[in-house]
Length: 229
Image (cartoon, rainbow, N blue to C red; front, side, top):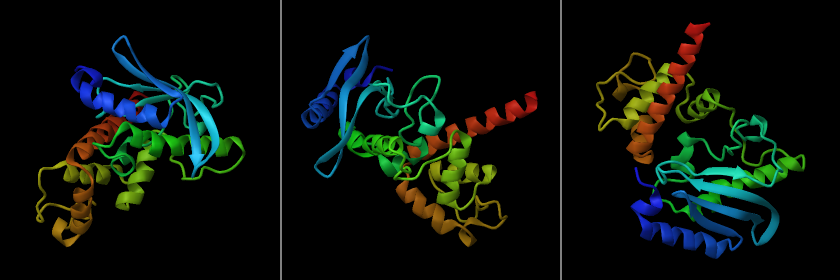
């Protein structure tokens, strides 16, 4: 796959120009076919700047289908899971990929990502650094984060039930006579049909498909580790 700036240079140029116009201390460059934005990101509440961070935003080859890869490069944030930074790579856990449809829907601009999820992530870091709690709540890590998220979304943290819900959400269509994903044994039309219908209207099929693949891979890894013990 060719990188975004090669596949769609017009949209790339427009998005980058929009970011640099609003954030003049962020500068874009392309090195070894990797698109990179780096510099100072001011964190504002209203018109007031409350803090700023040195950041690096890399756009992977699969962007915009793949999320940007963000690192704080000023040395302020510890590389620790409880600060939502992956210790081995220094990558910032800006948002839960399964929640992308809510926080940064497909088709949204790069500026919308910086103004939304990225701004909130670094605002949270600034507040935690001062000793305050995370302002927008926080997820656990790994599979537990997904279980917590889907428990809130679907009302269950049963792994197999979540798999079935995701299969229903990524299917081309659902039928009322199917068994309900909640594993109650009842038909969908007599159980959680309204929930499935409403979520299918909100979550793009492609997002559901990617979420299903990630969740199935997490469960396989968990099972493989359990069998290896």
